[in-house]
Length: 233
Image (cartoon, rainbow, N blue to C red):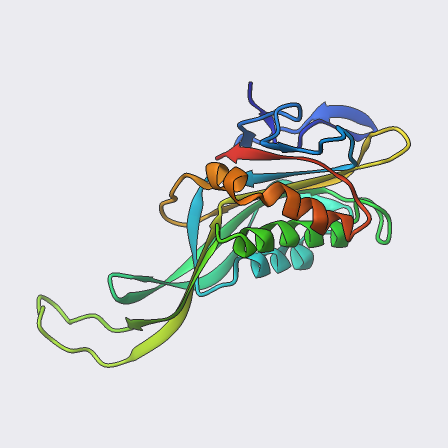
């Protein structure tokens, strides 16, 4: 069964199901790939199955765009943001845009489910992927800026440079609930896109014990992680 990665009904006056055609979870909220053994919690997370290139940009830092462009109460569903990056391919550096498709609903600043808290949780999730070796970092990759002119194939263009190259998930989603009624306090969905993606992140999540690592990270924010789902984008 597929369900929105918002994991539940949203409420801003009237409850509704989040319409997110670009984000569909492989599991619903009762089918986590990792679940709190006590079966309780006030936070949920979802990670995308795709592994994609972020070029020379540290993946978690792209979330800063959300802080700068979304309001304190939310992001417009399907809003697209972008971050310029250099992706090295076949020994050449390519100037590209890493696109973020964002949606979210935030609680007031300082409250549970605020924009600041949700961004911090999303960053923790992406950083945990790196800590567990799922997201990768290749340091000082050499590349050329200039290509051979015309039909020349044996020239030696100048301008050799170096750039770190990062890969990470193509999706992260976090949701925080209220303790009193279990209702939504706030959520954030982010889909990343550039070029081709490789699958296999979901299987690696379970093998690497990411759920427990995220549970520990979320507990530092005073939250209990109910579970982690896998998103198929």
